[in-house]
Image 1 (cartoon, rainbow, N blue to C red):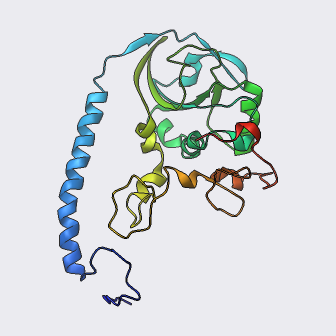
Image 2: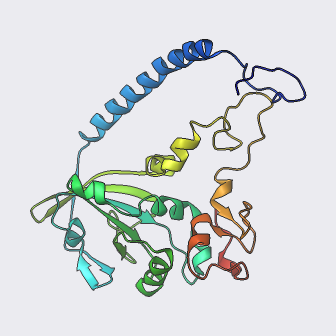
Image 3: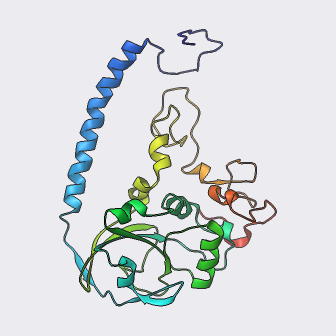
Length: 260
């Protein structure tokens, strides 16, 4: 049923006006002009990325995976392009003590079938010791290739929390692009969808209509307790972990758990 009631007992305080469909469509079309401009500017930025200068690196540097040490070149899986996500790591932490930000990125990269179809390989790198990493990957049910780059220099190793792109030409390897922070957001489709919803991400920094629900700290919903309540408390974990085997609320984070 369609209603345009402005009864103050049912109206959302401070909400945008309630209008008929034709009026809404006019406003929507006006916003579309700005959205299209935003898209075109994104296309222009992507074109500029493809023209960035490149840095050659040693493709024989070894990283550690399920088959032991392998040259970085192997991560290309015979393809010419490689995208890696550098996952932060806390040594000796329980699974639920690992970074919720990196977890959400990795969770949205559960496989690379479409990347592979386009001729691009994907790998996740982290500084953790391989035995700890392997246990975590098994717990999370990840299917993408993971490798430890512990003690490996940048740009293969180095700082974590980055998406980094590489190009291969035979046995030569080049760094082409890297981004971090909100630059990682394109991986996280959930954020893109939330940006389309009435209440957005529900974060305090967002510009919302007056009277809209009060925003909370950034990424507040990325950790929850067993009941789904967002919290960074001692019984919380990155939200997808509640779908994994053995995710019981009695496990606690311990001294490594408060990372955000």
